[in-house]
Image 1 (tube, rainbow, N blue to C red):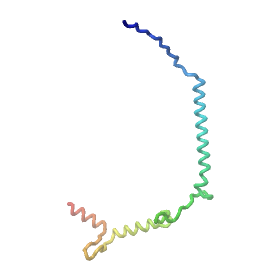
Image 2 (image 1 turned 90 degrees about the vertical axis):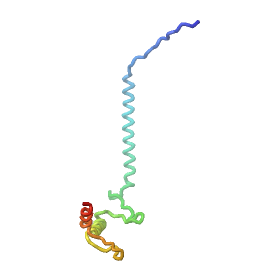
Image 3 (image 1 turned 30 degrees about the vertical axis):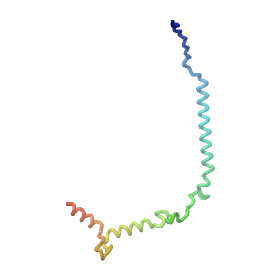
Image 4 (image 1 turned 180 degrees about the horizontal axis):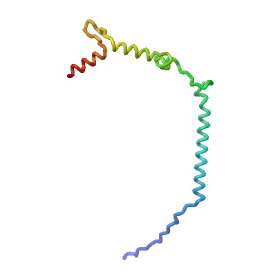
Length: 119
């Protein structure tokens, strides 16, 4: 013999939100945002003097790092002079190894020779 199924009443709560609760959470979120922003601003202000010299300009690092001389590109012009020397080497003919018959020719002539050979 089986016992009859018993139906339990289901009670559903109303779908309402308390206006005070929502306002309270929004206020708490706004206060937390303001406090976080003020804390971040304070930390940035506290750390700023350590990154800058008293004159307001960034401190200059060491002149040589890892064996490489560190300078501003436009300050001493070494980069521009190096590029000019490299470009001049591309534009003139010279012997690389005379005994082996290896020579360097200007880049424009070399590119033309490659184009002619591919035709």
